[in-house]
Length: 457
Image (tube, rainbow, N blue to C red; front, side, top):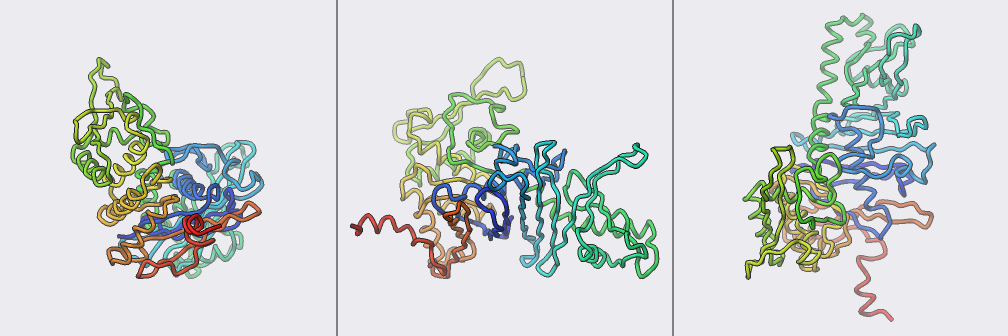
């Protein structure tokens, strides 16, 4: 299985004041002390996907209010709340047809005081390992000199070397006019370079309209994979926050599970209601995890007049031994926390799944079993997991699976967010070998608390 996302670059976001480059795998575990910046990495990826989503209409802004993430604005994201600072996010996508080929997109945002948003300023692109990076700068839209026609925003190469790369990639040479830019129309939907507006020449001869159209089509096709990948990532990605709440007595289809972020996992109820097969699979895994209850979704009848989203449901948990049905609030907090995680792992395919603290309120043995479920979901269903966690047992199970040969070492990426005294943070990657052992030293020792409590003074 190929990773949906190979890597993430972050610069100027919260505690990451210097550029950090992260390498992802089918399963990525993000460790670190509290308030070190672990959650910020997941949130940065969510914000990026919302901002560059090809299906998104609207302004060229940093989208901090979307389905995956909806908290604060540019000022709450940028490091030190410095509104004069440029914020950068980069994403690397692998191509499933060619493991050695990838596409890289980086975006840089600056704060616009008039609109109060972060506006897209520069786009950097790179294709395949050997492709040089190309930076394009946004030339804002403006009115023509006559004050009539609106000239749309365009991306132009940020430097002469970038312009030459554009020419080389298209087989074109610079024309006689020194100021002849390689212009790209700005596609507000895709947020990516679109059709080539003005090519200058090929071997000293003007390029015909037909030739220009052909070259433009070739250039646009080169982005089709990136656009489709971004679209599928944005539309399908799941982000479960650190506190899942399924305790509502009754729910309707439109009760907080629409355009807002479903970080509490409320959609779990409807996923179980829509599939008896999924409900049975979830019940089986809950049994394996030692949970004695079977999830049941009951449909309640009401005279709603056929209003959209008016279907009323309630989630109950049936005791395997006694058959007694209880509400989620009656059986302890752990069940409500694990149920969305299990449902997501078993109900999705080829999806990017981001979860904060999947192990919360789980017994250590169950944390290890949860690791087994996540590995199976990644292998069999092609899901990619990025997990912010404090669980030693989750990692121990994955190291055990590597040691026993069930998964390769590069199937799991271990990242440690190391906070500094000055309030900044650095992301350290800790590689695993064929035996599941650490090839790099774990900062401050690997979960030394147990040893300290047993043998310390």
